[in-house]
Image 1 (cartoon, rainbow, N blue to C red):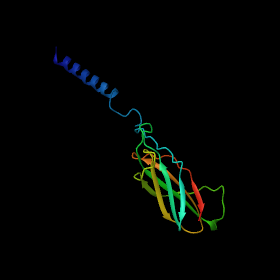
Image 2: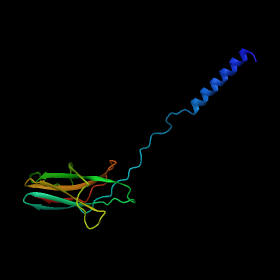
Image 3: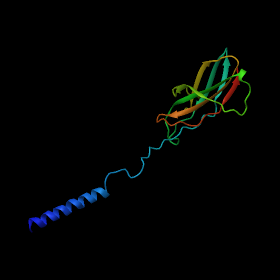
Image 4: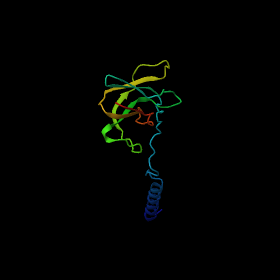
Length: 153
């Protein structure tokens, strides 16, 4: 073969390799998909007690099982405080603010997979209080809000 013919074959091979690389390149073909996160179940037994101006919230954290596929890290406590002097507004949205994160390390109840959790704070007089809790997993996924406790102190 002549050197001219070899250079054409070489050029064709280079072009073929470039085309193969172009069509099968490692570019992103679809948007990335985050790993699936399992949301913690909702707390449904939030309860409260008052003693000497001090609030005690308590609830049972959702149990962690192989079926639920989440690892409970803790629960966030949300509070809404409305002074009684603001009047009554039954249809107004309730503005909650996060006041604490309670880690999921507490005393166990009779159910070995359930964890009793609690939160305490001192209250201001003449206000309408609402509280709810939201559990979150070690991966950062948050569940839905619990039942709401509401009282006037």
